[in-house]
Image (cartoon, rainbow, N blue to C red; front, side, top):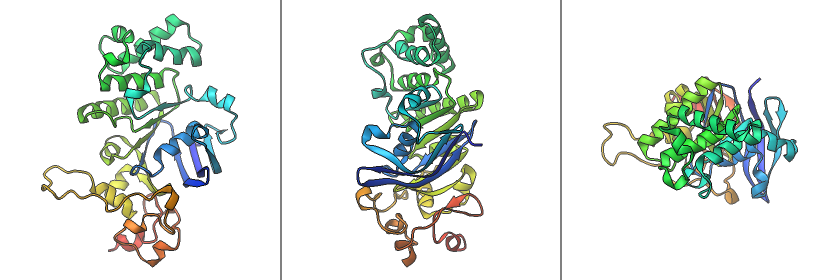
Length: 320
């Protein structure tokens, strides 16, 4: 049984329906990439798993979210609080705002293991310093006593990762963990997270809009578009034989070595607003291959030769 399973999950916020029928599994020792442009539903998917939708007035209205045999949709908040942070940890997308500026770095990490593992202050500090050393932080004992403003962006992100690891979770959800970092530091942080998954046997849900990061780190990929799953497959299959036109366009947006100046193109148009989703396939207004059926009938997420895709024209495009 998968560690985490989402089965046909739909979410409402007031009268809006931003997520519709999200399904995927995640196993231990696996890195699952959740990709798509801003507005595709990536962060909402994370909030659904973390049980944080009520903070924005949302709720899961259909489907099941099961974590290690636990039904998260019906889980009381008191039980969720014991799970959240201990067995399921979140790395938010901006390390600059994830840390309390008036509390020393080390104390913020210590609090996690004190709360969830019941460690004493001395034991929690020792554990925090050990985690920081594992994350390749030099002079960890000194950094432990620093304030966030004394650290660089990359170092702050390492601290946020240390906080996520402090209670020894089974699942980490990383929501755009390298957005605010330069390219060199991005690569270092992603490699650290990959190493943690392999060494500790964690499961990692890596939310990103960067297909280059997906290629570097992920085992499998779920492509979201306008609140629905467009495609899911192993990372090698996604890049070698993408089945959905949206996936193809995302891959074409990756800069390549030696590419002629001006030849890199974006995807025409924008992700539709949740207040005005189009009928049929939600990508059809931006799709160069769209036909009449695409605007009227919702494509099912079906098994293809490799992976699954929700497109009426997959077979046509494969032979075109």
